[in-house]
Image (tube, rainbow, N blue to C red):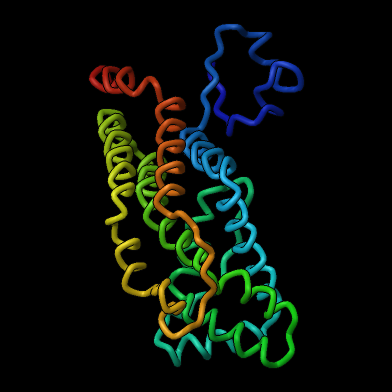
Amino acid sequence: MSMGSAGASAMTGKQNGAMMQCQNPHMVNIHCVAHRLAFCTSQAASENSHLQAHQQILRDLFYYFKGNSKRQSKLKEIQNILDDPCLTIKEIHSVRWLSYFTALSTVQRTLDSLLTYLGEADGNKDPKAAGLRKKIANESFISITYMMMDAMAPVTILSQFFQTENVDLALVKVKIDLCLSDLEKIKSMESHHLQALKEELDVQTGFFKRHSIKKTNLNLTKLTEEFIDTLKENIIARFPSSDLITHLASLL
């Protein structure tokens, strides 16, 4: 007998969780690998106040546009004018932390349009738009957005592999090792989006593309190294038996 779950204590905890394992001590409890991977990322981010603040801003952006067709229509109009992708701001789901990547990607790909929209709304005496523009028109938010695009990409690819219908167990260790290797490379600050950041954000003149931004003295290199190191440690700790999985694959 076996039981698969998201690993929540309500289902598996010894105090308030399921009693099936007490009744059947031979039952195998399987923690969903996609949820386990999501925990690696969310816990790594929770240890850094800059990343926590960044997530909150993404949530604030979603709720600003949610249910307001006028705002959404105006944003889409600006996206068309600026040749940005016509994307709707996405929500971060607390139980699906990797939804952060979808929300993050939407903001990063339409950041020019967002800054333009919020700037115009601010001029029209919209206090919420003014507050949001202040939060995103600065070095910290823009830099973290680009860095996290690179950092989340390998994790998202690994998560998608875990969720395929017929996972090849022989590839599990290969995929995990590849993810760890790709994460380590990001610390060089030469990854795809971090390279683009150097071209699009001029900290000296205080401009991102054509938008005036505020300098915050963020140490992006230190932040990147700390986050990547913690994320890698979490992945290694939560997937310690990948060699065993590889050996089991030869028996199937």
